Image (cartoon, rainbow, N blue to C red):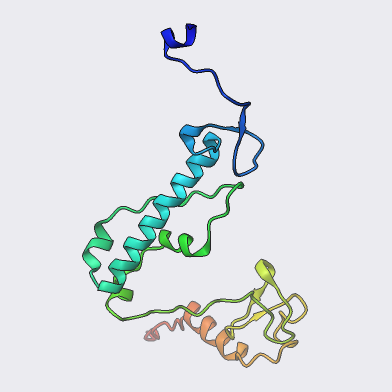
Length: 172
């Protein structure tokens, strides 16, 4: 009689575990999931809707709606990994891609010595010939440098020390 007066019903069976087997208890209001799994499922559904709409816009060629439409940031969780199809949503195509012009930059690899191909990283030495060398090949005599140091030194001295010639004095 007491539960009829208050409107509450006693649970018919014991506590329900989450259907994702995460170890927490679920409820019928959240489709027998715990609150975290339910929130992750809702987020996944929203991202799927955004992916479908952005793919539809790209296929139709309407770039104006893509540029003005806000895109929700992708949040990854440890419990449920997001498939690769949904992770592409975070990258908006640029205007150059939409117009058919694709600009690709060559991927720069690790910096290496020109002579021995050893990785030098931040400790590489750049020579006046324009190449990058390791500590062993950094000197010009070790890597057969084509740069003419003698001519460069002569022109530098000529610029730094202009010829000073005084006028001759007339003899009295």
